[in-house]
Image (tube, rainbow, N blue to C red; front, side, top):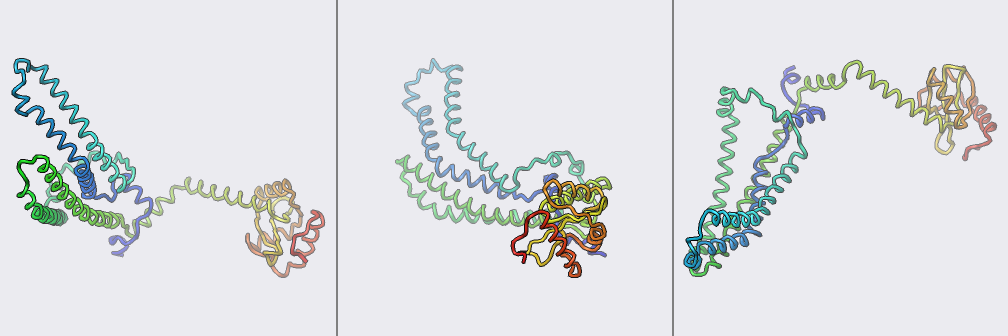
Length: 363
């Protein structure tokens, strides 16, 4: 009984997964999102960093160079001039950094979509008073789970710090030997070094983030597990109220009736009594050892079966006792019993005579 009510051993149903998703509860790794941002930023540094740095360097030389300062008419520098220069600078920064911002935005959207798909959850935005409870907040801060998270975070920082230290140690000699009188070479060296550092940190962070995502996915599945009692309760709930059950039964009845009418269209003969029973029979000597019951119905269904049979030219033969016996004794899909073979040989011969056709393979 303890397992039945306490231990979660059952796989979650699709309904439980949908409820969790509607509440915004999905498997998601914040580290994976951050790693994606870092990779996108690294790509920007590698491919756009040098042109941006050269552009900014040229801009600084233009405004802060000695020649510009020496020939500047300081009397004309006023608020209008400063606003005009600020506008020029803002336009340059916009044109230079807008592609970077768009790349980072696209990366953020792509990473979140890859993790959760399109997720719109108003319930996740609702204010929960339990989150404002100071006692609950302190319990979360000083819980075992928080201590484990802190230890994991410190481990990640240690790994990234080790990667950064190892990379900088390798790059340090090149920095110390840079020619100070060649600004272009200095810029190239700085760009190369920063790119190497960013690539190594991004790859290391991505590996850690993939592990974190795997853990978050596993934890999400564990949290969704159900006890046997929860599974039974949900199944009862999904069965619905009496009206829902009646609608489902009605839908099943309509589907079964439609299937019966389709079988009648392909039958060789329809046996009936005058009002209450109809039984459709089909016989294909190539594939069947004996005639087979393909559909049967009572009352209103029986009448509709007769209407369909007549509309497509299937013979309707009134044999009340035989029709009632077949309806009572045989299920749809069963073959005619051996003791009725002689009766059906005569019946099928009569059918073939009145329809003028004889199936292939019948001796």
